[in-house]
Image (cartoon, rainbow, N blue to C red; front, side, top):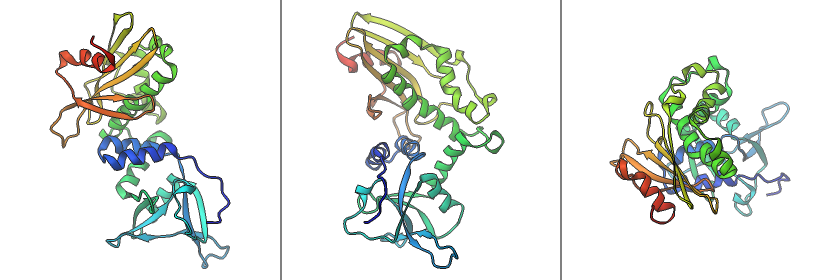
Length: 300
């Protein structure tokens, strides 16, 4: 390929793609949606002769069933060797979404890295992406947050991304400043961003916190999250555990299982690199804190 463009760093997106392809559940779908939102992609294009001033339109490929997709690549290294294209567009993912959703055709979605990962983003995924985009960008009157999907995605993003990111970045500073009001504000921020603060369903009294110093080398904070609007992939409880002597930190959650699962609640660990590890079925209520401390390191 003889396209002189700077490459795109889509490391986070490519990691989310790999996680989703290994385990295509709703949690990993939500992570993929957020990872791809603000990215740019390489889209192969061909010249359009009918346009007076010239131009390009994306290539279309077919799968074995004859379904048509628009190919897109997350980086130059994902292009197959010796593959030639007339042109190459370097555009935002949301523009790809607009191409397909705003101009109905037989194309059923986007094929991400079709010669390697071949992850198919069908129209339902594109519509979910647009919903997330609208919730953050559009004017207040153009979008209503009175939907289960919006509440679910907001909670998931706070519990699985924002809180652990702040914890591992700020460490003791985050812990020292953490209280019910701070938690409430974190959950409320997305509603404010779309001008729907009045629809936010919680107050600081919706959250309960308990901090326990077990030993010189072990402390833990238990957070009971709101039970109201607790959807699948949302968290019933959050646990921050750390060693004050070494400043080693851990973050664990009790996550509500999918509606299709028999397991009602999972015990998960979110690592410093942002990955989520499903550990086991959540223990009985009275045993959760002890189990979290065991998993963090050593008997409580």
